[in-house]
Length: 115
Length: 112
Image 1: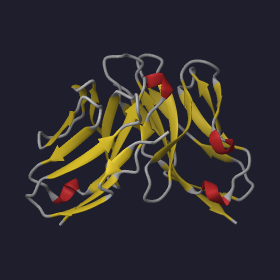
Image 2 (image 1 turned 30 degrees about the vertical axis):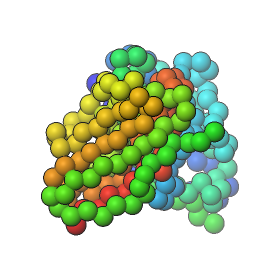
Image 3 (image 1 turned 180 degrees about the vertical axis):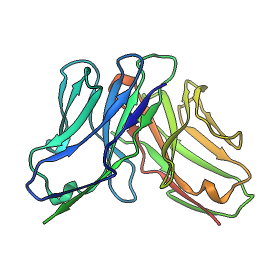
Image 4 (image 1 turned 90 degrees about the horizontal axis):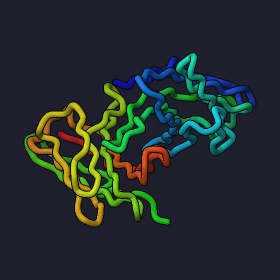
């Protein structure tokens, strides 16, 4: 069974500061990994995905994440936070098989950006 | 291209009633999956359909059901609604797992 743990349900940073959102996963086989962002009263928007190409993945809005197999981690970073980054972020894992696709999500991290 | 469309956006139902939610996937996407989002339980997988067949099912009671039509549109139904079914229901479509999943804006269901 797969599982995802996001450390810190709330993270607060100042505008211009580094953003680091942590994600650790558990999977019996190398999974696909995703980061999604959710703004209030909206669905989930894909920020980036890891599908076993480069371990450093660049996404939209200046975000990137690094897949570290030895640490079973997929932390999300952004060098400089912007007020518009305030939202909830979800890390998710899915299997690679064609027998069925489902995402298992972490509990989410609410990012607050202070002016 | 058009994204994933969910209708309606908001619903208010009474306990004991049933409800049907609709999802139109991105053109060409044959996999459609449904998720329930609540403050207490977070995002939980309900079920996934591919070419009109349910391939995966989450740990939800039988009151939750779904189906997919030949044009890949999907519906989910919840019968005998309970207060705890109040949630944001999200639909996602996918071409293949490695391409990712595109979500709709969701249907917010309130059971009173």
